[in-house]
Figure 1: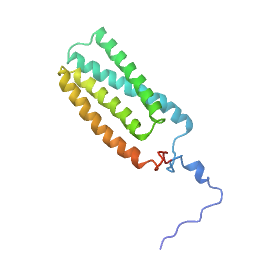
Figure 2: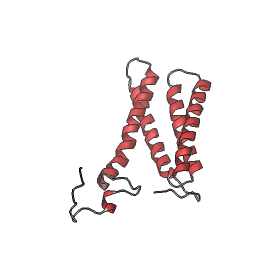
Figure 3: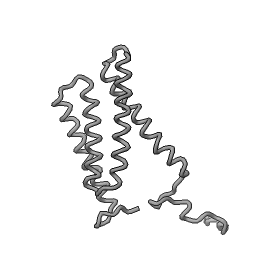
Figure 4: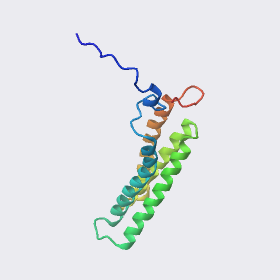
Length: 152
């Protein structure tokens, strides 16, 4: 039979290996700081490119199209950072509503750039936002105690 090898007493403490959620934290604090800036920038640039590509419909890239893409990217980044900052300070219902409104309106806007009607774009955004709300509300509901405090 196989047995575990004895561990030396010089190991790291459990608090140093795990993060606040109890899961192993494999990244340093510096990596988390870099990611908190890099993730919104990358997501914003992808979103801006996607919106600009939908708007030009496979045609040539113009200066106005580039400007539209960068303005859309900046607006997305600002809203993403705002929702992320506000979301951690509110209760689970409003937290889920914030993310659902952000995701639904972002997708509805992208859908509207591909020459769809306002009604169809709105319906698509509301449908995606409703699904997003249900999923996130369930997630936040199962990760909080009865008083609404997040379980870390």
